[in-house]
Length: 191
Length: 191
Image 1: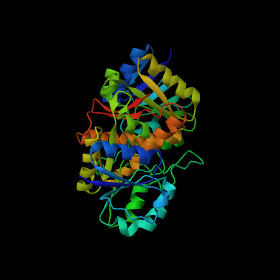
Image 2: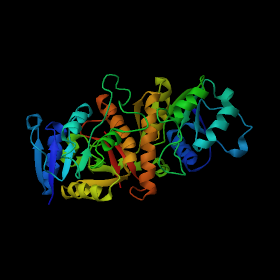
Image 3: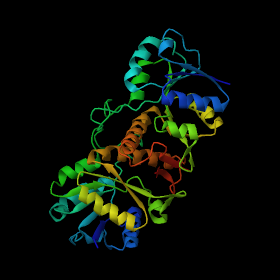
Image 4: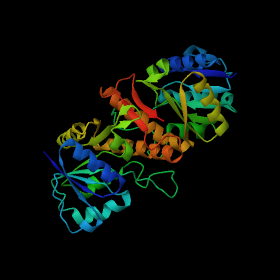
């Protein structure tokens, strides 16, 4: 039984809270009015836009020490919609990991649209959460929560693979924004 | 009716030749012993490993002028299996386009394993060929061939999106090499 804190009450925060709830684990959902409230979960999901992560890391860095921190962001440049705002050879996850050296940072949920977390399916396929990170136990903990909720989890490798996950997330968003794929669909991992 | 030349007779070259054949268009398959034979197709698929492209471009650059050139490569660093060998902010497709300024370069087939081109399916889903490029007519020509063969085609945007397609191809290869996804599966685009 794990306590999962989710910072951010938007579409993704709510969808991930639903996944955790279905998994039988406990959710703590923290919104903007909870800035003074400490996070208590052993897993903390940063369910905020990429631009809001730096402030949270600055404010809550001490609290996040020792915890599994889940980065779900897609750092898309929404002005140009033609690139990411992180360095080409890096990733948002790598930046967060560098800022939180005492946390175990994993990348997850950035390639699963909110609707597919809620429905549990991408088309007729089960929704698969791709998880990248350098700490095997942290990945296994999150994978256990995801699979207990009836979704699939797939270990995508080390945190360096966050770069490819963010590229995949970006591609998927551009295709959905261009109405070439639906927000209820996207890329399904076919095992 | 288009004539499609495929340079490279390996697994991918043969699989793409099968797609063209099923589409009702004509295939010209060129192997290593055909180095002196000029390419005649209006569409030319470079179905060779990334490391072999530079020589072909150097030898056949003049012949490729005016043609639609299809880059299918995944420029994976197979020594480390941890990055691509192209610059992080670029792509193999961008390098080929720069080397062939009089050709219309498109990126395609790098996210579809050979088995999924032959079977026409990724699991129970139709195989979708993601196509990126800056020339709408070139993309439409290739998409027409792909769909006539019973596959799906999806316009993934400008040639800049080749970077994301190569990230997706790399991710998919690492997952298959790690036996986390089968070579008959991978990522299916769910419309």
